[in-house]
Length: 149
Ligand code: RB5
Image (cartoon, rainbow, N blue to C red):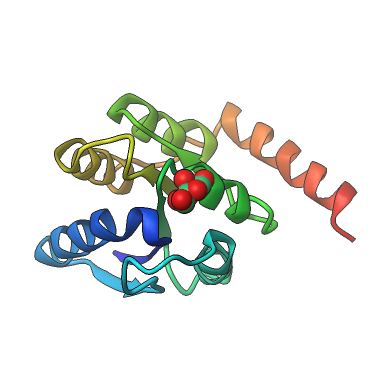
């Protein structure tokens, strides 16, 4: 699978662990930075990752910051992005199955590496169930159309 990944300084170490894990599993990973623990602004990373997913260059995205919140709020401003913050594996598969989430966000200061890798594994191996959930996703798109001109 082609996966886009990014983080701010608060998620740098976890991003490196996830990249190593995904590559070992045979996935193609594009790292959008940040590339060190030096302070940076999470919207600057969320935007290129979100755009690469919306344009279908990458199938799914993963974004990490200290909490997973700021970087997820930023990504969700891009029409077509459904970024979901997950701190447990149930949410990770439910958000793919029900919300067709296309970006996973994680908080490095919230979850340990072992749990984070399980969440990643679960998220990328789960699929959208469509059906009754599709009409709800369409309603999200309608909200975007109303406010994004
Ligand atoms: C950076 O200190 C921190 O605010 C950021 O990583 C994130 O947690 C914001 O939501």
